[in-house]
Image 1: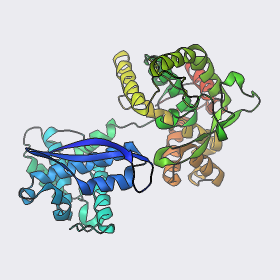
Image 2 (image 1 turned 45 degrees about the vertical axis):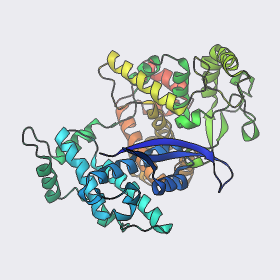
Image 3 (image 1 turned 180 degrees about the horizontal axis):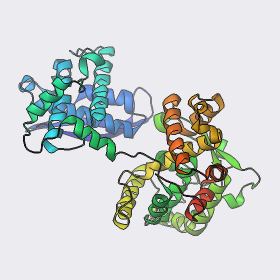
Image 4 (image 1 turned 180 degrees about the vertical axis):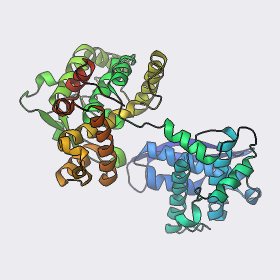
Length: 434
């Protein structure tokens, strides 16, 4: 199979006159390396504002190109021509091939949903080529390019192609296992307590708590300033801030999709941040930063690890996964699906519980209120707010039903600062169920 390298390119864009960064694909052949111009132009055009998106798109296109290299149709074709000769049937065959491999391995991954979403990214790539004047054989229509895995005929075909005769599992069984392994409920109190204890560096535990109270993404947390300026000029250590307001606004720049939004942060969360991280750790870490770099740490950087390096989303993912593995060894009931990003689900769930109160369990919560929707848009940064609303209403209902007889207490504590709520939970006064 063809080897394709993915490499981050960072340079000044001649079109924009600014620094840009995105992934690029480089094909390795026996005597040469080939920059894949058409995919790379697409990645520059559509993903330069987010390396995470660029990584995902480049990985999917790379997988599709590697599949094409195994097909007889492309044996004599130069890889630089793949975009011109691929058609809708090739996209369908790629999807079928992935599910054949899945059946052979008896794996729950990739799910049909993943296969479907990845195929849509490939269609997006070909649509971009079509609209920018490049010749392709792909007709960008979902109905002609997405395999309908619900049909018995297609499922039986995959089973036969996989040639699995002993302990064979069909796609439906594998899909059921995949769904069962996914998170079904909010992270619970015992998981929160144990997860926080399993971070070796306290900065990550503090960031997780802040995320619980704000729904900030890891990339947003990493841009939270020590001392703010402009719209954030009021942001500083809590001990130096006005104690009267219950909440403060924080403007987040360059979030997902390079968007700017203003969120609400409770004063208790800022107080916890000050007492658990800024006062006991930050001065030492800023000194380490200065010793290493030769200049003071910018006031725009708040979170530093034990070595004095700024915390990045990648470091959060790595340390979060390490904490999960440790937690799973300490408690067999700790779910594998729990990760740092679970913190982002906490805020909207608690917000909806407080907003609707007991009405959450009635039909009235199925209709989104304008004020409620706008608050979710601002805090979560989601465009498709209807999907977000429906998802978290269901989540909040599960939490309330798990706390029958304690709903009033749950509502009272849910937004008086996430840390007060966690303390209420961990003290035994309130039980959070799955």
